[in-house]
Every structure is written in structure tokens, then in C-alpha cells.
Image 1: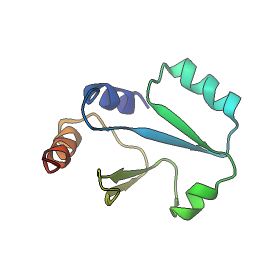
Image 2: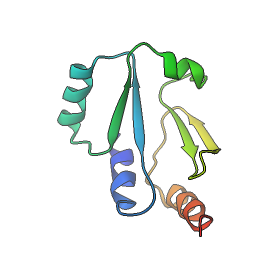
Image 3: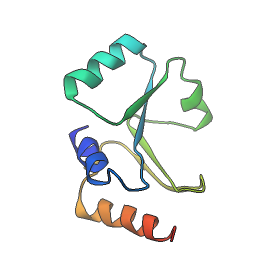
Length: 99
């Protein structure tokens, strides 16, 4: 999660948003976790797993990269470092393609 927080902060003020979806836990548990880690990106709740099922989530964590038009442009399963220069470059390219 620290690399996601750094990625979120790196693109702050740009047309980029990082949203996390917690699957299967209640609001209080998730709020405690977010506070304890100092996370500033939005964390949405999928308490019953319905959203995860609709999107075919097969592992946790699973990341979807969705462009401004709502199209899926990338998918990653499992843990990754998200604030690498390679990932920032991919996001910058996606942002530039909007112009």
C-alpha cells in the first residue's frame, strides 16, 4: 500500500485517480486500516463481494487500469510496486493520449 499512496500523491492535481475497493470487510475495519496507514486515496467497500464477482476478481490484490473513457487498458494480479518510473511512464502516456 505504501507504493500506491506514493503513486496517488505523485499524480495529485492531474486527471488521475486511484481508487481501492476492499472486499468482504466492514466499514469500521476498513476505516481503521486506512487511518493506521495514513492513506489518502479513496477506499470503497464491497462488503458482500458482488462487485468483485462482476469484475472477475480472482486474486487479491487485483488492479484494473481504466482510462478516462472507462475502457480497461491494463490489469495486474498480485502485489507490485506501483510508484516505479516504469508505471509512472505508463500513466503519463495514458494521460497524454487524452490531449
